[in-house]
Length: 328
Image (tube, rainbow, N blue to C red):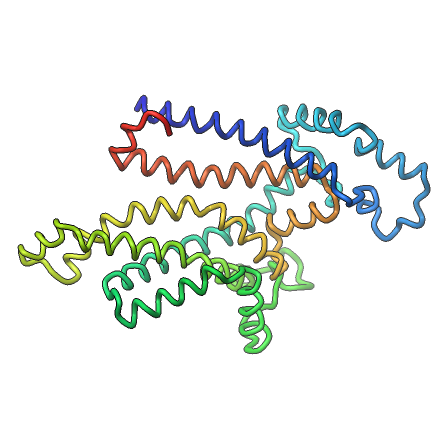
């Protein structure tokens, strides 16, 4: 128990230092961005706004202060639990993140489960059928997916299932022109299928290739030969000595893939105009919404770190060799 507490303390210390570094780097990059946040805030009414109004807007949002003072003010408010107010949505950043995260969470959980299950099964099949046609097809499929951009896969699925076949909606999170109270669960699921399918298809490759390699190593080990000598074979042999031993590394790798999942969600949400964290991040970056962008960066860092922490905790608790390590 003491080892787990020390483990979590070390991880939390790393998280705090990571958040500080990311916040500083992000703010520096934003301050040197060529995008004028005042112009982005005003939008099409730029020609109607005079110099005095621009100064009032800059003063209201604190954009007329030096970057160091802006960062200090933002950091002080953050320590008090205030993420600031979004310039785009005119709402508190915390409320926007909470709303967008629910949409992205449903998308990422479905894609994460599908990619994990499909990848694990394909990896087992490829290892059992090593060097046969099934293994070659699965390897070709995985290598192709590993080099396929998420947005390209999204566009292909969009053209096939939404444009040509017209089986699924072309985008967004709900039907256009329908009031929120009239949107059904079936409508939300229908708009969720293509983005989730895009993420799950792209995410299959790593888990499948990793599972295949690990299971091949296990099947070539001496205790597998001993089990065969005892008369074990077929699915019973694979289940008792193969799948059980390869499942932990596969689960750990899949939890550690949260960062890739979040990055892929950003691209998928842009392709399908899905109202999640990814679309909000792109809008905040293109329109110079500093409070929203910083809040999204911090939240996404915590989300990715939580996935890596869960993967490390699983290894730390289940694998006794991890407990013997002094530095993690």
